[in-house]
Length: 151
Image 1: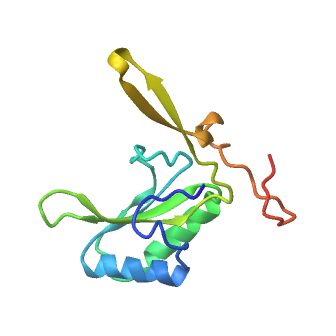
Image 2 (image 1 turned 60 degrees about the horizontal axis):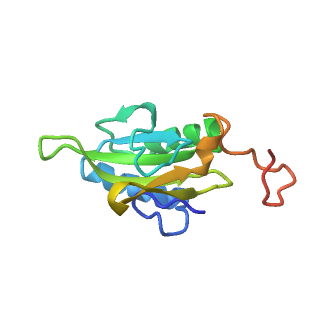
């Protein structure tokens, strides 16, 4: 299952040139960027681990791209995103956020149904990835390169 979070999530994965273009767009608008990663992409998990600090006062996207590359190398089987912040309204808001890396295998989610009093039905989204402990939620890719993952 392909996780669809953030801008461009329904499109094919962005190339490095396309990522650089989006970072340039953010910097041209004065939006500082940060790189974040997680192995729990639950829709309500908005607080991902930060890779370094947000990068203020940049004009060249090369510094952000260097951080994206470093985060990808350190966490190849995690979701990595770039987030651009806009403080023009007096508060820090997300202006742009998009994935720049995803694990080779994305196990997806299950919808759990719970029936309550007065015929009420509640639903909970359960990510299959969280059935394993943090740090081992996504299998390493098979070195044979056949598209399957090792466990």
